[in-house]
Image (tube, rainbow, N blue to C red; front, side):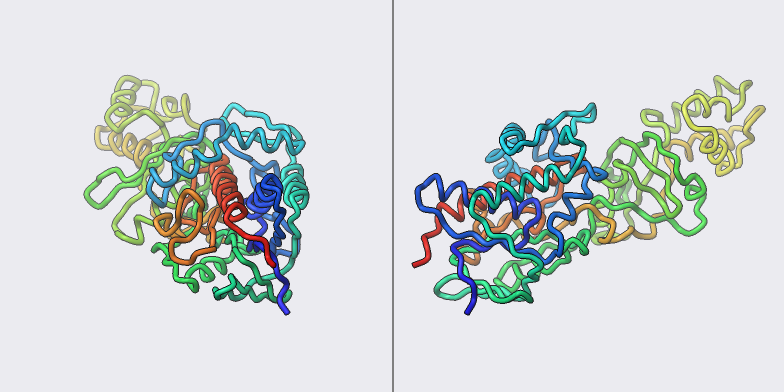
Amino acid sequence: MPESSDILVIGAGAAGLFAAAWAGRTAAAAGRPLTVTAVDSARKLGAKILVAGGGRCNVTHERVAEGDYAGSTPPAIRKVLRRFPVADTVAFFEAAGVDLKTEDTGKLFPTSDSARTVLDALVREATRGGARLVHPARVTALLRDADGFLATSDAGAFAARRVILCTGGKSLPKSGSDGTGLELARSLGHSLTSPIVPALVPLVLPAGHWITALSGLTLPAEITLKSVTAKKLFHTTGSTLCTHVGLSGPAILDASRHWLVERAADPGVSLWLNWLPGESPESLDRLLVEGQRRGALAILRERLPDRLARALCEQAAAAPTGDLARDARRRLAAVATATPLAITGDRGYTVAEATAGGVPLAEVRLETMESRICPGLHLAGEVLDVDGRIGGFNFQWAWASGFVAGCSAAGLSTTTS
């Protein structure tokens, strides 16, 4: 016989643990405790939480708005975020014994600088609310019947009146977020957006590309995505890291999902890098003219690391010292402010911090995160078509959507007879 619960949470990561905690709290506050079971396929819970923010866990950001996200429509994302804003996140964790600090970047981290502090608090609050955590338990099928749901897993079967699906997308599959949840949603009638691609993922350049020789170099840069007609599709400025296979760093990670999604629709899109944020080919050309006697290398080294400055001169076939002919000068100005990036791919889901794409928010009732297609099914977190930029935004989406799903599932559920 399957193990029965009022609410079954599938996926005990950030969104799942949060949903379980709030389901228990809501039911207790209403004076009718419900049985909540949270299952997860990982042998050790919270792998994605533990590696987030370099092991410190960037819990949220001091300013969060719908413009920090991509995927579903901004008004839909805003409606969910407003149900559980940043202030509520801070209050929840402080009440759970996790003090947070705001860094200069606006990111909020636990004062312990340990992601373990965050995970332990989430597990503690979920179990305090009455949730039973079962893992490893990989759910392989989810069926809807007249009495609710039946989930089959490699750890047995689970029956429940309501289900909260919080399995994540496809990023970091070793953590259990391997796309299974997306297929479970589809098996119950949901559609999935296309394409579904890695988000917040490093990008790859051709082997031997000159940028790979700058591996380890980090500096602020502008990243611009353009259409075939040179229309600007995405633009950001931020820290950029040269790696032995391509590019990484916050600016590249934020641009990655836009590059991958747009390229799927139009292979002719292009990505450009400006090593001198704020400068244009024309303004840099003027600087090179004004400093002609000092030499191009000396001018570039005032704002760029020496080895990058030399590499730019080499790529432009421009003499690092002495006078420059007009064509060489303009080539240098162009490559320094608009380097075309011959991206060949990305590092994949095993490295990506998030997934772009999933179940459209249009198929969910935003007031409850309940499916419009399969009554009794709630969805939260990365399984939905919402992904945020780097900086704690994906966690804030997990908290907000998990809160709404957990409270609503508990408020709408009835105790099993």
